[in-house]
Amino acid sequence: MPRRLPLQLRLVVFAATIGIAVGVAAALVHRSQGSATQPSPLRAQITWAAGAKQAPGLALRDQSGATISLRSLRGRVVLLTFLDSKCVRECPIEGHVLSDVFRRMKRTGAVALVVSVDPWADTPGSARTFAARAGWSGSWRWLLGDRAALAPVWRAYNIAVKRTPGDILHSAALYVIDPSGGLRAGYLFPFSADSVTHDVQRLAAGT
Image (cartoon, rainbow, N blue to C red; front, top):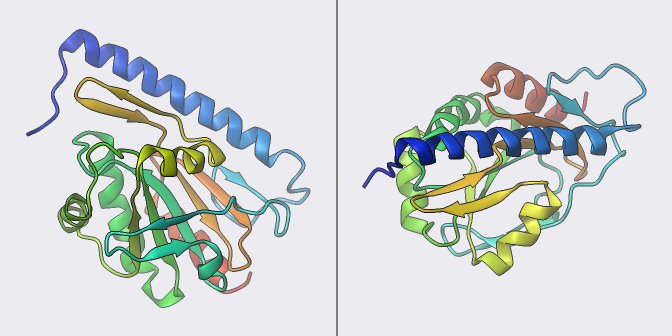
């Protein structure tokens, strides 16, 4: 069933979402200060110089039950984002943009990790349904868990999550991690598939 909210509550949700986005933007800027002394060749809103900031570690089970960690993906570019498989508003829009990115980054060997922001309702089945509707292909993993497992990852990446009646409010951010495990790029949604693909290709090529 689509998650529909009364108009007044939707206005509150909209305001809260804007506040979350501003908070994440400020956090990203704070994290990036002093990290890049030269203009970056990357197109992200926020960038880090090589070796300036290690991506916070994580280890969670994916939609197939396999444990995935960032350490296990060393040597590959990693896209990391945060979605709700039951969302009917922003998440499906981001999902379709990501579909274009995934299709175009296949030859790079990059992998995409999606961390659930809905431990109350996300399941392996709902993750697969979301991916099918968005037209995902290539190498992606939807990371699941209970709130105790997911909340530390949200905090580490400055993702605000708030459960409301009928919806999950959360930050819409995408990070790109280089093959050595370093944070290199941060995007707030909406972002361009062209820009993300450009950055993934550059990092995969070691440039």
